[in-house]
Amino acid sequence: MLSLSDFDFDLPEDLIALRPAVPRSASRMLVSKDGELHDSTVADLGSWLQPGDLLVFNNTKVIPSRLAGTRTRNTTHGSGVSQIEATMIERLTSDTWRALAKPLKRLAVGDTIMFGNLAAEVLGKAEGQVELQFSKSGDKLDDAFRDIGHMPLPPYIASKRAADSRDLEDYQTVFASELGAVAAPTASLHFDAPLLQSLEELGVGKTEVTLHVGAGTFLPVKTEDISEHKMHSEWGEVSSQAADTIAETLKNGGRVIPVGTTALRIIETAALETGSIQPWKGDTDIFITPGFDFKVTSALMTNFHLPKSTLLMLVSALIGLETTRDVYQHALDEKYRFFSYGDSSLLFRH
Image 1 (cartoon, rainbow, N blue to C red):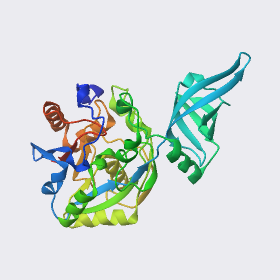
Image 2: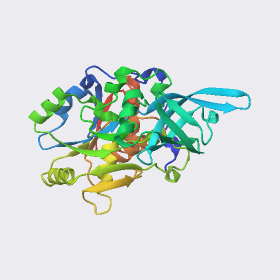
Image 3: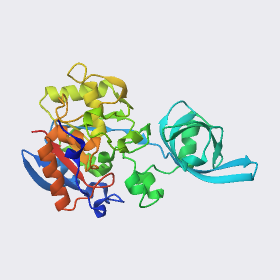
Image 4: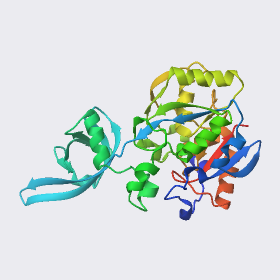
């Protein structure tokens, strides 16, 4: 039985990338293929692919959902004002979100927080989270987030620097179109228009699916027995067009290569019931660990992940635990840049 400690490693802090490479495709890329490791670059991705291969991108769009505001409360001792930071993690209705807030102890049910001219009432508190009902809803609320919000950078970046105007572009993929994520599908951040054009000219196809990445992607696994870990669900969709494109690729002998663990999770979800890719829409909490039977994925392009994370377990399921350890040791030795703004890897199944 695999345990949490099987997926641990020591990462020097100076390998955590705080800004992306410029241009996007200038990132390094570690390739694992046929039992060998190769140092390459994202710009050279085409040399590792062949005509008829298919890249699958997640077209989710990140909401600038980290808000800074104030809570004013009248008490018997006068008015009390507290600075509050809230990060939206799940939309519940058109005007209500579940959020992480700090300092949480400063908030009580019934409080109103003012984020500029946007008001939010605290409807509830539970399990370290708050439920906020905003004074705007739907598209108007999304517009307000874009006007006043900051990109919800992962904790390992946000703890070292504040989000700024550069992140509004850096932390969004070039094909982001479906608004709803609170974290970026970061493997796709390496792609820009020239790279996409060069891959098209090589005969490499592409299709898009949607998985709205939730804050659960950053939550650590806390159970030593990894089978006891409960994944947070995320909404996703594989359209009929995407399913047909993937099925046709496989029929013709091409390789299906999801760009990012989120794209992989949604296409494997869509193939879970029947064993072959089907149109699919809904919430998925698929947890991919060693022993998983992949139905669609031939290879994966992904960044380097946190120790003890569900994403590292997914990588180990695809290429094997020992190969994963070799890949990560090589990345550490060669000082690849880690996590959301870091370098990439291209991992072929054995």
